[in-house]
Length: 156
Length: 262
Image (cartoon, rainbow over all chains, first blue to last red; front, side, top):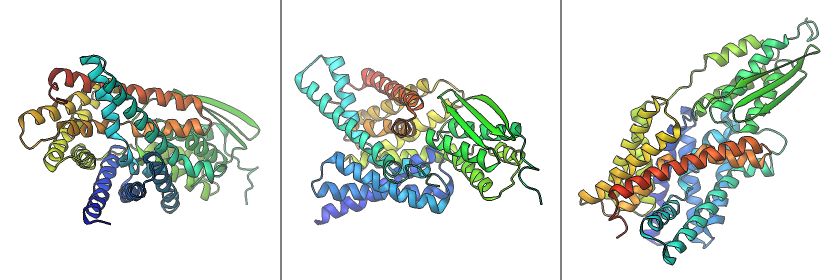
């Protein structure tokens, strides 16, 4: 791996941990679980970064990263005696496709204010589809342990 | 030694304890499967033979059978804001009741009533959300100057959101005002501060503090697990909150953001 990629990787891990921690405070995650939010955020980002480097499409990389965070969350939940959602939701926040959501919103706004153009319409559709698929991947990834393993029995 | 037949719990207090637990979980953002599961488990742990839970977004109904007597009741649900600390405290009480056989419903109800929804200090939350949005900006490829300004815009907007929330306005209005403030600060920074080189990313990252994370995730888990009615209610609210934030952003862009994409 090149030095610049490695630097971006390490920086991204630290930034994702901060982002997950910030949102954990908004969701009033109990103090004892805050560290798990940060670790989960870093883990999800790191995994998706590696998968994207291996040329996995963004949606599938996000799905795998979110499911991995969720499975690790089940393990932590057992240790803490709390439901995994308590900290996994904050942990997947760094995966949220903010950039494509904003691109879609901006294209919509420009069409509204400056009139229709095929380029703007293409940008709107592209960004909106990517945002929808990535968001759906996150949500399904999080639900994965419940769908595959814990169908009848509760996690905690 | 007393058997359970000689000393069964009276159904009424048992029902009150179950309803209180379910109500607290639902009001603080737990997913429906967890609410039903914990309410049923609490009822069983306290000695009910059967527990049935009905869930909608606005009310919770519990019917239970104890001592050959069947009782049921409704509770109105109000949105009390996402609070995972409360959710995990309720869960801890249920786990404790399951572990210690013979726990009295009155004791459980008292324990549930002493839970006060704890919140982190507002200043700390605002600063940390600012830093989180700054991280988002950097992850989207912004330079450090833009990141710095994103931190400022998001922290001020989050402070405003927490301040406005004290007056119990409709959340849609709060989200609108917050998105307007975040976008305005980010755009004005791009215009007047030389170190903000990519104001577009600053806007995109600073409005991210308004993503309704729990409603969105709960929508999918609820619907996937068969709780379609609560899932759809939460999903509708999440979509409205996003649209309301987008309107706030659009208003700010209309008023002052003309140079953002030129």
